[in-house]
Length: 154
Image 1 (spheres, rainbow, N blue to C red):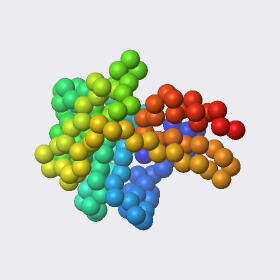
Image 2 (cartoon, rainbow, N blue to C red):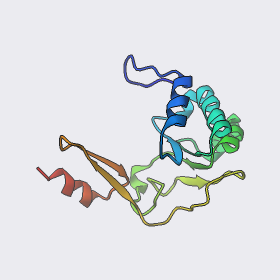
Image 3 (cartoon, helix red, strand yellow):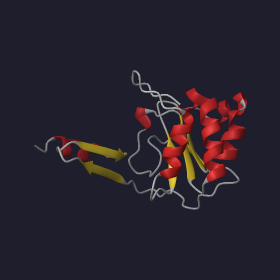
């Protein structure tokens, strides 16, 4: 697998070992850019994770269900994933009341062999990490008021 950062290559075997050796992890999430830009490596990696662990596999893709079906990629994604969030993010359809979707057009798919039992709620969760140097990392889909409030903190 590769990063889009210059000179930051990660061999898929090394990435697999990092994932499998991580303590306290219940699942892995693959998101953008677009994970399917590396579909051959993603297929390989998901297959090994599925084979060697009980980790839940969650994939975000900007492709629609029909596009993945037409390309043939839906088959292996459905075999190897527990949750798929499909569809392009559309700013005008942005939602902050859905746990796993950024815009209301996106579809949540549970493939037939899914090991995930938790269904998303219509209550958003936002996670905020504060680094020792005061830097903030915001995960989830924060509403505009929270982002403004956090950006005004000195």
